[in-house]
Length: 187
Image 1 (cartoon, one colour):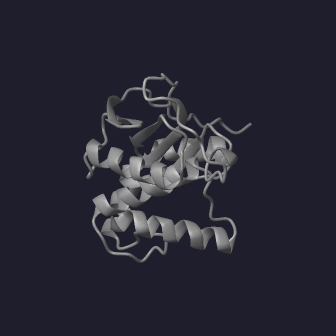
Image 2 (spheres, rainbow, N blue to C red; image 1 turned 60 degrees about the vertical axis):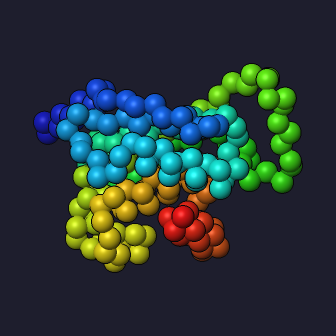
């Protein structure tokens, strides 16, 4: 009988910073060994812009976990059935029809209290983002040369749009998602 491989225990410790960009709250959780090339405030601005563009329910919250390849590899295996690390994984809490609704949402009176909807969680391998940028394998085409901060902004945008029901499985979906990402990254 072959020995069973021991998986690295899931990391649970992180420094969490909650940033409010009304009507959004973005919790940026950074694992102890991770050094982000992008400040938490910039990550929150990026998430807020993507949520607004995707017509996310308001008020809402998102958690972004900045971690490494080992944790993303574990998550990728556990949730996607793929071995090895990836750069970003999204875990949406809402069905896609909660977004991009053609029905006009009516906002209650300003004094009315509404519960904050948790839109989902994003896990990003900062290690992979830095490596992709340094190797000139950034962007979706894998041939973009830009800074690690720019690569991380792309992954935050991409992950947030996935939370909001955007996908790139079909060519038309991919073209629409990439166009929105380019617009958001140029702002």
